[in-house]
Image: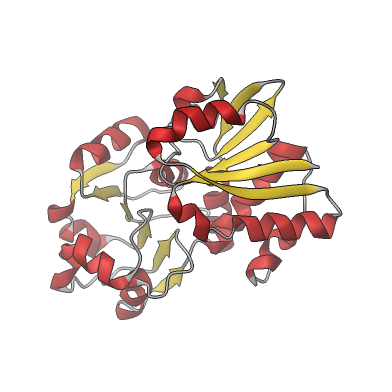
Length: 273
């Protein structure tokens, strides 16, 4: 039996990746197992070393390790190297190679919702590993201004200097928000109380008259600040479930060489193809 897993902190326990992969394995008659591996950041070096001992055939990486895991890998794909973040590891004859299927997963989400080209301004909240994949994708589609907004301005500056876009301090983001048509949340903050605490800029009830869509790459939250914000501005809301399924499909291909119909990855999540 082949064995795969997801490495992250305690939040990984809430991931739907095990449900996706276990369902796909069963429907394909594939003898595979998918488990969650909790790892505190201080334990990452030891965990990364143990993963290379042969027990696992492939690994997904989630918060907060997408950037931190890179020094413990033997090689990176071109895209993973460009963005500086890894969410998929392939083991090849004792070598651990990092890939980024979040980029393709977000590309697939944008295509699904008719955003193969983005003619106007975009605002992206966050500056972590997932933000890197999203920004990489958006830079290649957007003809307008791309604004990266984060509580730690220096992280936004580092990210935009590497991948493109413009870093904006959180406290100065009102003007950019008022002109954007697409807002993307790549932070882990989605629940209403938490978002209002960490994103006080929205307490002023900024009116985003041009807003068309809000994408929150998270999913499964009891309450969702971004969904409410979209409703208040008569905008479309999209969560991260489709992206999750799309990047999982791409990870499966890297691990097995098999291209599987997307609907098999969507069905466990209750999403129509």
